[in-house]
Image (cartoon, rainbow, N blue to C red):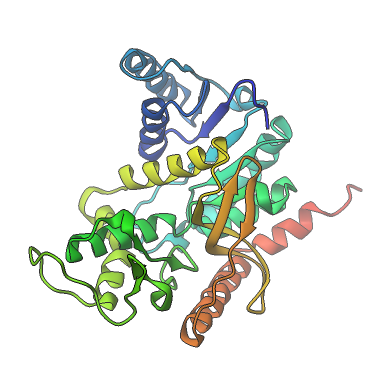
Length: 327
């Protein structure tokens, strides 16, 4: 990765992309920030606004441009998506976004052959898998935001209902970023104390809820926000900036992201979320948790859901056609 000048390209400058751009500016995560949107006029407007804001944050070179402007990026974040009109679940976006990626990813990977991809576009696990196949990048340099945001929602709600600071609660939601995701309650803890069966309550300021109820609330969190305001942007932008920060700082942080699974618990050739160690080269290691039998079954079930959805979307067929030699 280029160490002299950290360059981030954001492909997709809707509500998520623009919020992420502001977050990158506020945190000073790069020296160069490129905005690429379907509507270049709007992307240019976002760039102007961010340039004006930079005097209150960090000096960053910010500009909008065509896809060619992403050349030699260190990190490419893809949030571009077809419209989310009347979306019932994230898998509904699969066919349209797969077509979008068939055009975007080969170009982006050729322009920045050493980049790390961070995928936000839903269904994020399938789009992460497709990005690996379309780019021919090593899986360590392609990740999806996955259940990082679900785990964050879970921890924030556990903190809300217990009175314990969310940073001192360790609890993962893993698997698909979607309906088949599951909580790893057997390994959830606060202050070294397990909390598989009960939620500790230090302040009785909120209604008492059990862990399963809190998980269900976290699982529905994205759709809850979507139903109320039509989109999500703040939490996913901060989650993504956390990944960028971990990579550029070579921090070794352990965070749950969507990554290619090859052989864990008998699951292979599918992307879904597991805790990984992040550093300057991307995913340094996948943490293979010692989950109980129920959680292992949920992991396999989630993988099966994603495999089936990938096949139904015709993604595997499209990849095999792209690999055919030109006659």
